[in-house]
Length: 226
Image (tube, rainbow, N blue to C red):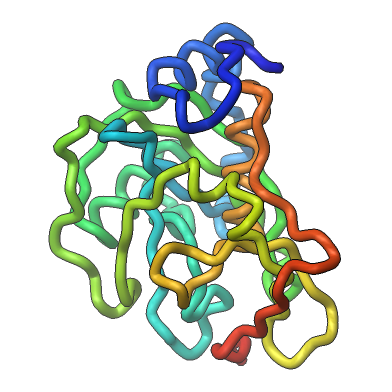
């Protein structure tokens, strides 16, 4: 069991997450290549946690949009780094304000996840995640409708419950990926967002639910954007 030694995610508090990350020295801002050529290949998302009756994470449903490799999928607020962004923390803060009207700042950041590559269509793009602790009263503001179809706070104990795990098939392929059916009964958490949240929980000795052979299989109703 990781730092904090909570038997279940239901007992987990935001303060426990922050302590675990800081205790392992996982809060430093990662240095990245600032050359213009590399900046164009960088993106960042904000993993925003808030404490209500349970620990919650902010997720969005991306708008269906031609040319967007994340079209219609569950994600976290974020996007490509601008040449004027100081670093990837700045990118996550700016994109969150633009996409969902949530204002966060560097003082709320308690950690970061090193870059990973996304879907095969954007294999040259490196995406990192910055972790932020929001106040309990934090709510989504004005949504950028060209980018975001909807937003929702999801309790982490829902994401670790085995009964919510599914096999998820994206587009017209045959390969399935671990996924979690969200409380709305329609959206599925999978892919890079799934992996980021799983990595956030790792220092606390927890993990997202994984499907087993009898878990349902769901196919995406949204085809990959050309």
